[in-house]
Length: 190
Image 1 (cartoon, rainbow, N blue to C red):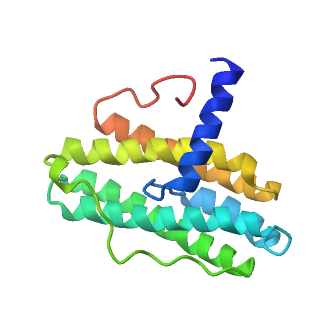
Image 2 (cartoon, helix red, strand yellow; image 1 turned 120 degrees about the vertical axis):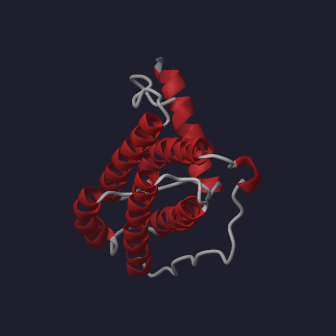
Image 3 (cartoon, rainbow, N blue to C red; image 1 turned 90 degrees about the horizontal axis):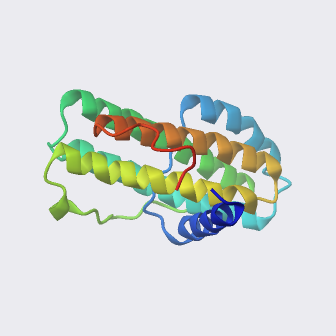
């Protein structure tokens, strides 16, 4: 893959991150523990643009929480798959709490969840459909974090976002595996 293609993907991911909140963004407990101190320590020093990026991520996390709840409540998931969905949702909840606290430390006001989110209900008729929807959103989140990382003026936030990106990639791999696809489709995210 050429550097030009990678740079183009980063710009596209950044635009997607900043313009869409329908991405599933998540963090494992490890990512949260790794990022918590960095986020807290840098909150006092970072410019308002960092808070804006974090608030965009918070909005996406809130939608991710709703999306996983929608999938869990759909009646389409087998019990073991539903448990995975609820585990991933728990990651989103913890991440949203951390993001909200960090935005507050920047002196900003955390965005609130929407009263209603629109998901493609008519297209989700099977467990495979729900898994595909979640996998596509996780893939988008990976690409979005790739674009967001260089946007932070505070490099500690970039490191925390990198931890979250790694978790997004793990979620995507787990969902691809559940779909019977190769968990890691190639050496680069495309």
